[in-house]
Image (cartoon, rainbow over all chains, first blue to last red; front, side, top):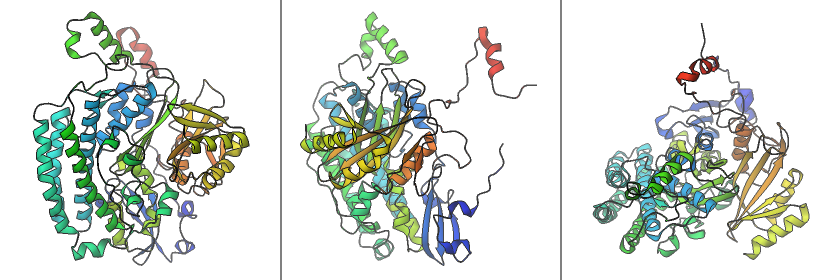
Length: 409
Length: 170
């Protein structure tokens, strides 16, 4: 064991005001075990009474070395790690990784798989927003929304369990398509969600949208402008709440998003309330997309027939020697990808989730980097919290919807 | 392909002697480290690449010289274009100018590169480790940094591997 390291305030001298050095203002440590920092986020706050002068976020408590680990695994095996990044958006993480591999090796995805990908990605967005709605309103002392939101989230999580066998760590979307086709009962389960959820979203809104206590805690709190968002690279609901309709699904459509009709909800206030309104409306838009996707769901295969990059079907392995050999080689050796580099991006519930993937001609990624919205959006904490009450810091953390697994990787 | 991206690429190639590379519709410009600040400024002011989506690095040790490439991913809102800049850096303790003054969001991204690769950004306002603990030794994403794991012992080499294992021996 190494000794505990002494941290001196001198190291942070350039980040706090001169008054902190003389003890005139107070440096307060918030987290990493604080329940309302949504995971292991540590904030060092410089306070003048109850007013926040400076906020210095400290991340890395959940660092698991996923990028380093992925470099040591073949493309198929590396995908399993992606679920663990943003644990509220496993389908989205799988999707962006698969898109990067598909772009690198130039692999096509059959139309049925594309549509199912969209359905699952949108359902995932709803689960993530429901959890966000519950926890962030819990932070603002609205207890009951949490219970309702978790109830509805369970319906969708059950659909994920139905298709992939796992509630959270799905690894269901694979390079070239999907692991396997959706089971019987998928259709009915999704339609049940489509039927139930619109009314429930109205209920949440009745609890919060015009609730005076909620409005007092959220309006004009944590304001950020479009210009600042661009400078700091903030994306997702944060930039949309400032009035700019930037959504990767619209500007650089993937998985056939251009075929669906949906709106990008925006607000102009840029505060916590605006971000709340954007996310609630996004859930409705996601339901619209799922509805259209369910109606047009085509028949056909769900995995590409380019056998260089996808495993042979289970039925063939029993009767064909070549398929058996191929299956063995595929899972033990992997497939080579060219020594090139690509960038793909998707719209995760939190913002632009990108992957920078570089191959080296071998079966393992040479370098893979996840560009994660939580990491980027957290950088705005000092701007958003300046001159606010310390109680509002909690609401602001909730409103940028961070997942520390996503930020620390 | 599209005009705006081509123009931007051509301008940087001509002014700074950068080399372009295209793969799967993405344009990458390889540019010398002494020009990165100027190039970023021109791309932002003249070609409206107003957001830095990402900055990261790649380590090519031991196969390639220069050892590191720093990769910047830029996005232009008005033109909806993506452009990538790659900056090769030599040596084991490389330096490069920070782009924080042009893209303030580079602050944390450059800190992450410093933490993970040990690349120092000159002029950076707050160059501390961001993810690893402040007293950590080494830079985890370098290729010469081992990915710790347990070597599997078989009957024929059990003794040999046992000697290499890091636990305390009697």
